[in-house]
Image (tube, rainbow over all chains, first blue to last red; front, side, top):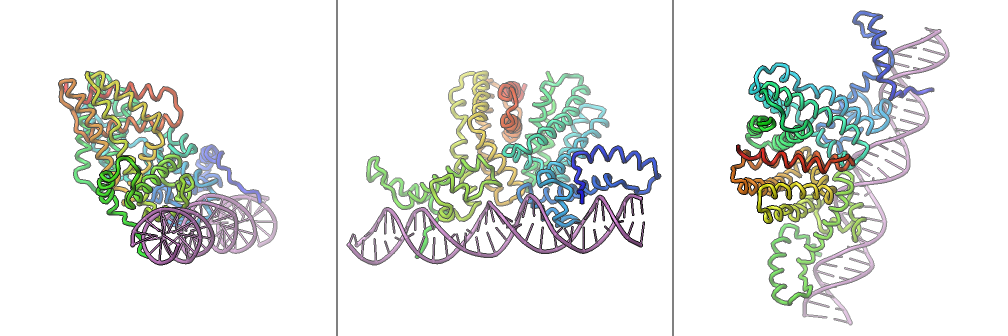
Length: 227
Length: 227
DNA sequence: GAAAAATCTTGACAGTCGTCAAGGAAACGG
DNA sequence: CCGTTTCCTTGACGACTGTCAAGATTTTTC
């Protein structure tokens, strides 16, 4: 009874075997074991993200996560070493889908003002549509101030978010024919502050939060460029 | 056996009886019962804040809080209705002592540049000296995105922090002979974003965090004023 | 189609949690 | 100094937690 549980190598295995299976059959779901293993991990993680976004890190127990999925509570430890392994996998998985959220507004922008408007609208849309995911993100980032085991993943994601924001700001600067007045780090910190503030107020069902955020972003962006 | 537990009225009682006892004796600790009751609440809250700052909201149990105090774990429910009542009292108590942190900076400032420098220094000092308290604050604010019962206190404290920041910004504008370019709300959001970012990095023991924050604040403040 | 491996379910474990009640200890009032 | 009120300790409760192991079930392999 040699258990599999190849947590570490599964990612690399998947890519290799994915190519092989793809060459074998045309479109049929011909899955290698490692592929299936990863697929289950992803399905479990996606279901877990839903529960985590509803309850937060502290209140989301493994049993509750499993109950809201199609699996039983024991299966979590078959695919993940422990709770932290699941959480980190979840948040990394989420990052991968979230980090290109603003690529469209960058690609489609033709004028500086148009970019700012589209960016502000997209931020508002994010708050409305993805509030649970983002409050989870802020929850985990706060937890990482206490739990060292979360820090590596949090810092890594923070870095990619900073780069995401910088793609917007630097494109905005180019379209304006001016130079940015801040570092990527500072630009991210400022915009993240406004976003977090608006998210909290939106969850508190305060009035005019979204319009105010739009206005704040439109007012801030020009300040990020040199005179 | 009519228990006391007058949670609500204790604050108003304290002020009234405080005056009476003050008129009675000069400086002796002549305590009325209600006064002592409030004093115990405060002592317990201060000890709890220490533990909360160490462990965070989720991991700080009432037993742990009591263990780090001079009381036993049962006494918590004598002075507080439940855990939430304790937490909210703690965070409100902390706010009262924290909200005037930058008043000295404002009062002593004679030039605009001097105010910015002193403000930036004070922010850095806060991160170094009060990191546990502030990560607790961010923890609770994140929790309030999930737990509605925390929101009232969080929003109220956020408001006072906004006013605290605005005292700095508006004084800075006056010393510069210019007008602020943002609302108090936006100014607080921006500075809070930078501060939170720096706090996390400081806890991760990253290099040059404090100098970078100082630099960022010095760069940001002029942007908050109209051209 | 049987043997083997992988996958999943179930139930239990050792802790910890918030809460509460019974009763002892101390302070108070007369 | 005694009765009463206030204060605090101790121990217990039910519920919940992450983790794991044994066994049933499914899938794969030859």
